Amino acid sequence: MADANLITKADLAQAREVEFVETFGYSVKKLLEALGVTRKIAKQAGTLLKTYKATGTLEDGEVAEGETIPLSKYTVEAVDWAEITLKKWRKATSAEAIIERGYDQAVSKTTDEMLRDVQRGIRSDFFTFLATGTGTASGDTFQAALAQAWGQLQVLFDDDNVDAVYFINPLDVADYLATANVTLQTAFGMSYLENFLGLGTVFMNSNVPQGTIYATAKDNLVLYYVPVNGADLSEAFTFTSDSTGYIGIHEVPDYTNMTAYDTVVNGMALFAELIDGVVVATIGAAA
Image (cartoon, rainbow, N blue to C red; front, top):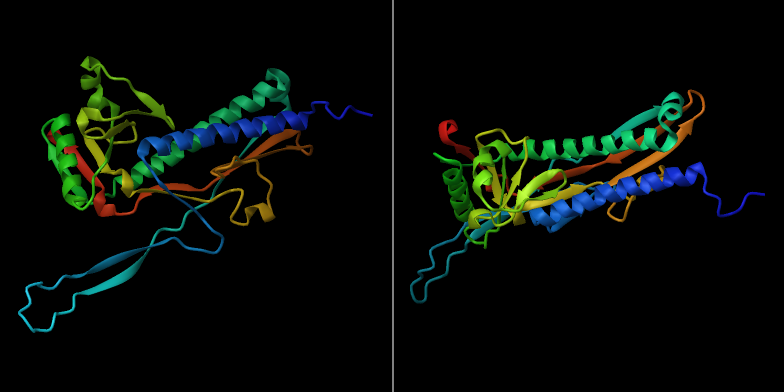
């Protein structure tokens, strides 16, 4: 009879799954901390995400003595957000690849690359969304455009103490970084710099078109996600996930074709609550 503490192939697969989800979860949490995202909304089965927008007109407050005070009329309208999509991926590692490179290396290396590709997709979707921002600004130089974007945010969020975040192409800031004594940090595959020129946090990524700056208030950013260990998914499927539930993975061998399959699921969207609170600034000739 085998010892109860015997390490089996299933144990190794489970260890890889745990490492996969914990690496992803840590990276997301670090990103959210750098972005200043405080609102994380988990998708509930059978529900739609809505926000509510109040609009109206404030009447003149100068009312003569004894006169009836006019009513200021406001209405509240529900705004539906686009429904989040649960994305699914699968990969297979053949028996021949396992024989050639070894079981752990053959499966782990491809799984690591799969994780990086999932992150790239989330980043790309986020920047595609930012490009739809309706605020505008421009400046002759990078620093001038950044300052103009900051100024627009002060106007757009005039009721709030704005803590700004910017997204730029690395080539637009390369000259400045070459001569500046700064320390870059990384989160979710992006480099960022806190309190850049005293204007806010700047993220650098090649998904941002050169000559363009995206800017918004940190409080305007929201994370909406499908908890893969919730939303009733666990009633039908078994995925390894960490406490956040941002991503799940399940590994299983298939003896019909001698391959080890990995299935990965993730449903996550970073978006701005107010699209008119996202400024798209242009630099130099692009302006």
